[in-house]
Amino acid sequence: MKSLRVLLISLCLSAVAFAGDHEFRGIVRSIETTYGVHHMHIPLLGVALFFARPAGAHGLRLALFEGFKTPTDSDNFCRVIESSLGPGWYPFVRVRSKGDASRETTLIYANPRSGSMRMMIVNLESSEAQVIEVSLRDRDIQKWLKEPGEEAKHQSSHHHEMD
Amino acid sequence: MRNIKRKLLSLVFLMLVSPLLRAQDFKLPVDVEKLSSTAKETVEVNMDGPMLRWASKFLSAEDADEQKAAKLVANLKSIYVRSFEFDKEDSYSSADVEALRSQFHTPVWSRVVGVRSERDGENVDVYFKLENEKMAGIVIIAAERKELTFVNIVGPIEVDQLADLGGEFGIPRLKTKPSSSNPVAKVEKGDHK
Image 1 (cartoon, chains in turn red, purple):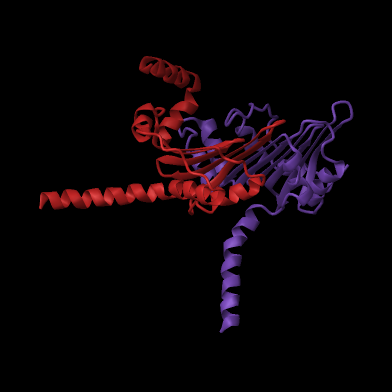
Image 2 (cartoon, helix red, strand yellow; image 1 turned 180 degrees about the horizontal axis):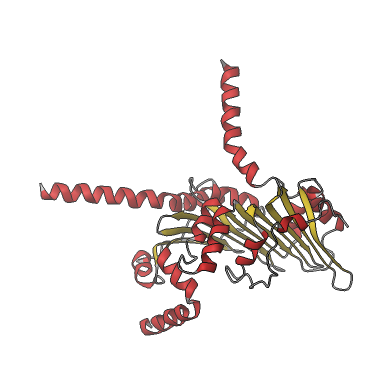
């Protein structure tokens, strides 16, 4: 009976995790199908992200694409990304920059929830792309906003200790 | 039957779209939108209702100034910023900017600030939207030789409250004179120089 309860709880938790994950997977899949690329498989990436994540950040997911032929139409790229995002996501920041030989597009979408903010960051460079999903807790953002200098020092010393 | 279905679909579409139209009752002219293809950098920042409410949470309830700022932000409908930066001077025409400005040459909008600098090539226009003698929005158009910036703040704002935003969200603290009973009344309507 106890094992059945544990199984039911595990199933419920995995369903919740999957619900939060489907937009990230959707974006990765849309990029793959639209531009004919595959994201890189990095062994133990999930474990590495769990231990190396910035303080206050959780639910960190990362997908990297290499050998990516930059789409000439960045508006179309935005549409591809936005079609994979469900309701509750807001386009927050969009930056498009152009150098002599390179182009870069950064898209940040936000999903405010009670107690935290989910962010989807998509960065497209001349031959690669990154998709990052992260959740930031309100209380940690508050700490950063109140004492940005102190928090930066704390973060930097924490990373030095890890090295 | 098909007609009813089409009408119902149109109604649903209008219901979905109308809040967006209310929040942003203007649009960037096509020629201005096209500038992103020639600009070295295009930055677009959007903060709609839920995002603004989320941001206002970070203003402390214990601090009186922050509480006032939170009240102002919580009432806003959206903040929209669009900025284009160019490699070369005169990458956009004055007609492009004029097409943008002309959208605010209507009775509800009043141009309250107009700066023209021949020496630096910096032109700034600030428009207030007035509804029932209350400010319902602010638009700032800043045109420099290599940069064009457009800011739109939608929602009820009082001039005194604007000063309360000083010191928050990176906005410098503003020095204000003692408040008058109706600060908006000082705005001259239709002052297009």
